[in-house]
Length: 167
Image 1 (cartoon, rainbow, N blue to C red):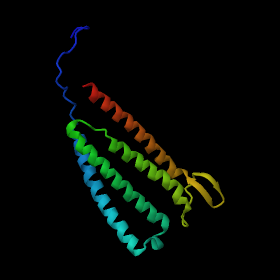
Image 2 (image 1 turned 90 degrees about the horizontal axis):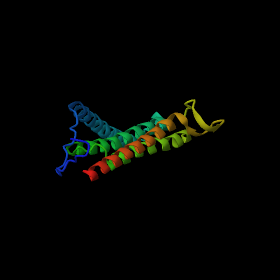
Image 3 (image 1 turned 180 degrees about the vertical axis):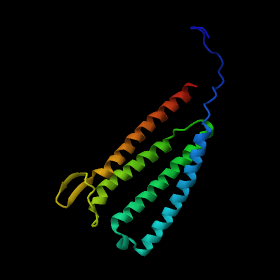
Image 4 (image 1 turned 60 degrees about the vertical axis):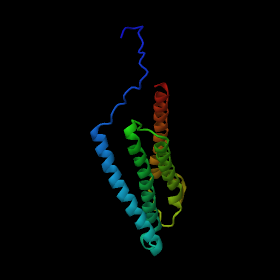
């Protein structure tokens, strides 16, 4: 096309197909995350019935609950990604919310876990005095990074919506 020529065809433009490698990795991650979420949930329920936190410690129990919760949230996000692949939509509001939610859960854990009786210092503490630790920085940093990543995914989602509206 010359510089001043315009395309007059109003049919939609074919979307870029997702590579086979991404589809295989998504399938593997769905499989592993699904089994991990199911197994983690069943394990947490049985440990609550047995009051296992007394035996294993409150911090270890909370880490297991946190891990199971992250797997469940990740599974929801992966399912949403898989459902949008056929339409060429990788980014979605659900994915953005899932990443933000994981970041928020981890950030909340950075405040909650230091309150438990068997908490051991990680060496990176924010506002600590003696045995009191307000925030564990080792847990806080990944939480904040995930919140930032969620913001970046939201921008990708907005760009994807803008592209769809233009087409």
